[in-house]
Image (tube, helix red, strand yellow):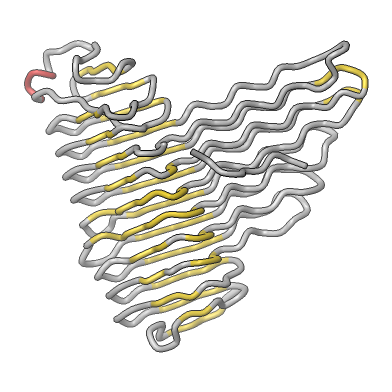
Length: 361
């Protein structure tokens, strides 16, 4: 049985200095920043995440904020066209084994990018926010007689019980779960299985922005491959497990794209991840473009469902909803001249508010 997810656990970063002053400051730590953070003008780098209760604050200019580790505190980009990137750390590879100790160690789990209590604020301006869970570590190899290879480590979540708010401006927000770890080989026993990819959004909240042309992309992580000679790969990660997604107040709508992760490669188990499993998605007063899709299976199993449980309410405007994969949930299109497209199961679109319902191949 490959490693699957049972449950999961959540950055605050605070930094402030006037931009004019920062222009003369070489790369260095700042008293207000968490340990592991340095600044070089508008370029802020943190190598140890952002602990709970601490904040990293950008300048009034166009900041680049790069964080490795988990954000449990706050990142506030402030004014300007900011680029904020957070990578959860990758899991360690499992130790190999030989001799008397038969089974190799499992790979370590990837870290979440934004964890419990973590907040990422774009602020005013056209911001690019990218949050990526850490990859799971590869399972160790067993050279012992009858020893088993280690399982891959689980991919880390992009956001778990945290908040992301793009703020005013045209924002491009991407949440992506980490890849599941690859199974470890075994020279004389059972190879290890690949692990499940990380979730894009788990029990968190995302607000896209206040201006049209903003976009939100949420992807589940790719499942880990089966070990050489093994069968079972990891399932693709669920894009939205639980959580709330709000388009915001954009008068002409936003784009929201939710896709489950693809499974790992193998000849046995390995399902595509669900796109929108359970949560709440609310559009804007304008015309939104919303796409929900399940992940592909790269083994012998099925594509993941696109949409399991809502609610999904597009609010106002002339909206387009496209669902690629199985659907069991209901959709409320809202006021406007709306189009609902589907490929497999239709689900339950409200016929009074979804004016155009189309099946396509």
